[in-house]
Length: 352
Image (cartoon, rainbow, N blue to C red; front, top):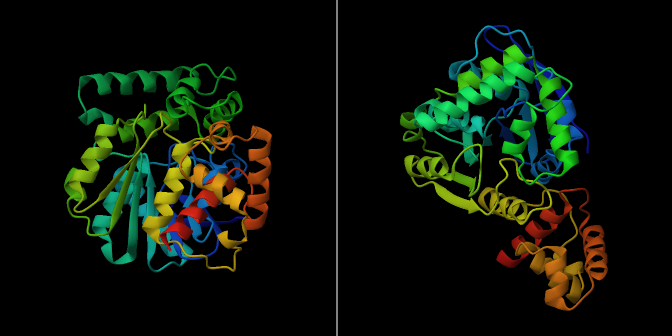
């Protein structure tokens, strides 16, 4: 599976890079903090997201103005500009109706787009986001906003990742050294310190509280309980503001869910159930698995680690790993998203 990168031009002449991969009903992913279409494709932090979202769907994503493969020299950075960029990418990609996925800051942009264009959306999925930026959440959040902006200004372009590592620890507190190091480097290579300061400052006063009440699209709100970037209360508020929104709470401290945590498996399962993801290509079914492989996969879908599965089934960890390897091969799933994809396939079969 490869990605196709294209370019389009926003109303204010900013060139935006977007990428398309996968096959099936379209999902458009709104901007996220510090993206780079090429780096993310090989990323130990984002690649499992791309694999899972492109499984049974066509995923369209793009780099924020000022970042990645999009133009770095930009005049306007605001909610209106971000919504206009999303409108531009949607038109350039040629999709008619689609599911919209907002992550973190992209949630506010997705809410504004959904209020403006309800006729274009089939589903709205909001993960780890907010209706109110830090500036609107009280004095403590405003102090944190100022501290993070100071860290960006002080050390963004320095080869020493100390200051950028503050963001890695907030976004990926359970990340491995490899994942943290990759995220440190991503930030430095994605944009300049001056633009990063402007982007972060523009997020502080965001307010889509009134727009959220206007959303008419079927909505799923998902939030990690221990999120250090956006508090769980902001996710709960968002689900309260949007009429009939469904809220799913995940047991994780990571703002960006990692491939080996149970919360990621649960997220993929909830997402596929919400979107009613179908197997648009002929894919091997659960019926090809052995009884023991089904036993292991059932516990994987319940969020258990390999060690816990081994203890539950009185097996060695190596035997559990062998069963999973065979399961992935039979279901034709692979990579870091294989575990979540297999668990989601099992959940679909159970529901059927």
